[in-house]
Length: 470
Ligand SMILES: *[C@@H]1O[C@H](CO)[C@@H](O)[C@H](O)[C@H]1NC(C)=O
Ligand SMILES: *[C@@H]1O[C@H](CO)[C@@H](O)[C@H](O)[C@H]1NC(C)=O
Ligand SMILES: *[C@@H]1O[C@H](CO)[C@@H](O)[C@H](O)[C@H]1NC(C)=O
Image 1 (spheres, rainbow, N blue to C red):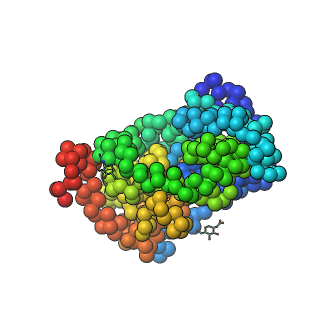
Image 2: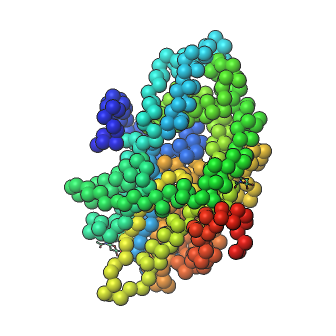
Image 3: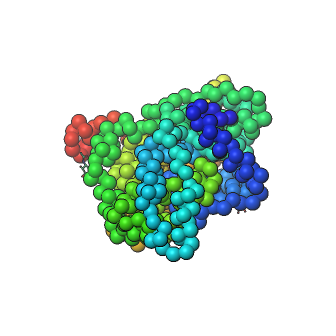
């Protein structure tokens, strides 16, 4: 059960064990959750998006499946694209956390740190909190992350008992990114299915496929034009040093009793992430959380949304186009599953489970035309962006998922999309939850006929200019 952890983490494992025991004893009461937990961007827990799971992780609500009631529909295929579960910070963030904790340990002065309760909390931080993150934890899945995927698998089984049945196991396709946290996640998903079947042993049968799940690092136009291009993320840099962030920095520095210039935007973010990590890894309300009130958290959430928008989403067309291989894979799979068959044909895949990253899901969602607000978020329009639909805390928390459900119905196959287990309608087909599959195909015709990875990702570079073939 503890096998995700390398042996040198045994102490940590023991500590987590204690935490978990304590939690399970008090599982009837909803634990103490920092009020800023819904603003953690890609570090948000899945439960913050679906709070009913805090009471019952196994709750399945079949009313989310919405084919027309009068067409006698049955689900025939499920494609699920799933982000890995909760994980440790990456080495880069662990180094920042280390720097922050050293700074606070050696340079914060209680006497100058605000008044009363603020000073007490700083004292708690300095005397009770210990730096326990080590660089070798680097982004690995934590126990809670394994649980995220196990429980998701069980709930999906509850929604689609015939598709995810034990008898169908050998025909369920399971693919994962090669990253450790994803492989551990796809294993946990299979364990969840076994639990649902009350089966005995799991024989893992997933495949690693980075062409599909890590397309972004193979797309040269993306890597050179966005990933390694400092000007591509200009809005993020500007916001980081803009007035909203600066005000947050000053407030936090004051609470910490630090000179404001010592607390860089990176260190402010490290403190915010610490609050998120202690919640998502240990289910703790960390003493670091007291530093942030709701308006601070919204500013920091906006900062990470800006980054995801300009790096992985609508900010640059190439970011979404880099997901063309995954887009085509999904539609090829759906085409096959929906095709009329003679009784002698082999039965199609009942389910396709694809485990990747936030960086896998966001470009695909963008390609599909979702979460595209009228005005792009920039460094200067924070005030007008409070109602934006592009909020990564809602879209890509840990264990985020996009589900495509294909139904066999009297008028032909229909397709429904769910994001994080809630129905979401296809842009342009907003009248129905589950439009006819052929209408969905017609909506995405331009992509089905184009969206060519070689051309989008390599073509631009060879030509060093705009694509003139269009
Ligand atoms: C199920 O979800 C629907 C909305 O999709 C909601 O109205 C209903 O109350 C939910 N039922 C339960 C038991 O949670
Ligand atoms: C870098 O990004 C900027 C802004 O998006 C763009 O104008 C420029 O062409 C990009 N540079 C490269 C080498 O792609
Ligand atoms: C297996 O999957 C198919 C769809 O491919 C479905 O019709 C069938 O009911 C599933 N269950 C079993 C037990 O085969």
